[in-house]
Figure 1: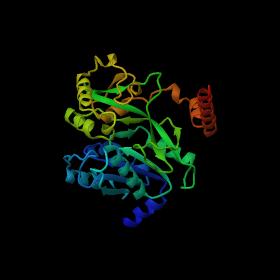
Figure 2: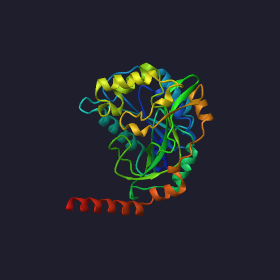
Figure 3: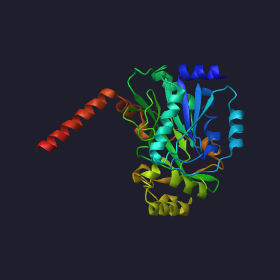
Figure 4: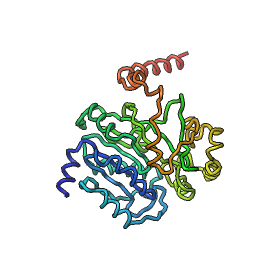
Length: 319
C-alpha cells in the first residue's frame, strides 16, 4: 500500500486535496465524485480537531475512519494530520498553512486540485480530461497557471429543495481549483495566471442546519476578514433564517464580502443534495461562451490589457 501511495505521490498527474474539518460528512458526497479519476487524494485535518479559529468541534472518529475504509478500495487516500489551529495565526493563515501542507504531501509536478468538503463537481471526469488536454503532465518548470471553475452556491435547504444563487446575465462566481504550481496566499488564490473553464461546481456553502451554519460563520477562513464584527455575523444570520422559497426573489446582492458576487436567489427541487444535482442543468452563461473564454484565457491579450491599464494610470498621474 505504501509503495503504491509513494508512486502516486511522485508521478500521479491528477492530485486532489481536501480540507477536512467539522463538516467532514460532506466528503461522503464530494469524494465519490472524484475518486475514480484521481491518482491520489489527500485529506488534511487538524490533529487536535480544532477549527482554523482555534475552537474545538465534535468529531466522530469511528464514523470517519469507517468512511475511509469503505471508500478507499484502491488505496488512493492519504490522511494528513497537522496543526492548523495555531493561536499565533489567524483563521485565514491557518487555512493557507493547511492547503500548503496538503500540496507538499502530494508531491511536486502534476495537476494539484484542492476541493473543500462541501464542494461537488458536476463533471469531474470532464474536468480531469480537460486538464490533461491542456497539459497531461505539468512540471515545476512550467509557467504557473490556475484553472478556475464557476460555482453554483447553495444558500438554504428548504421545502424539499434548495435556494441557490442565480447569476442570470451576471458573471458567475469563479474559484481557482487546479494549479500546476500550488501556492496558497489567500485560500486558493495566488498571483498565478487564471485560466477559466466551464466545469460547474455545486458549493453547499450556507445550505446547512442553523447550528452548523452559525459555527461556520464564526470559524471559517473568511471570519477573520469580512465577518470580523460579531454584530455583522448576527445580523447576517438573522437575514438567512428569514429566507424561504417565496421571499427569496426579493433579495439581491447577498454575499457577505462582496455583495454583488451573489446577485439573486432561486429555488430548485431536490430533497437531497444528490437529487438536486441530478435535476439541475449547468447554467448557460454568456460570460463562459467560447469567444469570451478565448479572450480571458489568452496570456497575450492579458498582457496587452495590463499594459493599457498601466499606461492609463501613468497618464492620469502626469496630468
